[in-house]
Length: 117
Image (cartoon, rainbow, N blue to C red; front, side, top):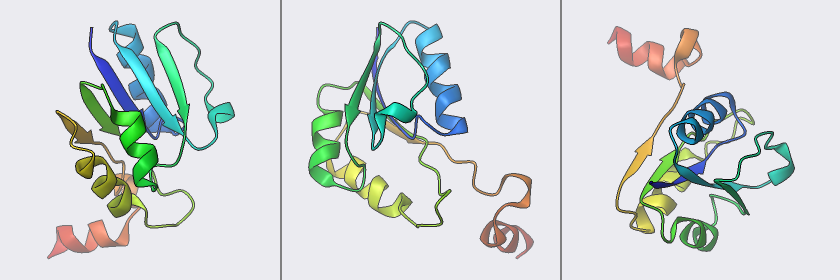
């Protein structure tokens, strides 16, 4: 069994990943600013209240995890991914993955521009 640290679990991509990880028998530790937004309950799910833009919160959350997955979105139009990614990498997890839906259905002018160059 793998202990997966997940941030962004309250969004669409993160919720799908969370459900899949739990279905596959993994334990999941979620970092959430607002734990009440998490609608999933499971015996292998632990929720840690904190903010992924705060290094100390990320270090506490990632400690002991075998794998870190970020599904952080940008629904509030704040560009936080760089800060979150730096905080995760600085916590030195054994493995980490960053999943994004940026650019899906033409949602990003930057992605459209990069593709057409």
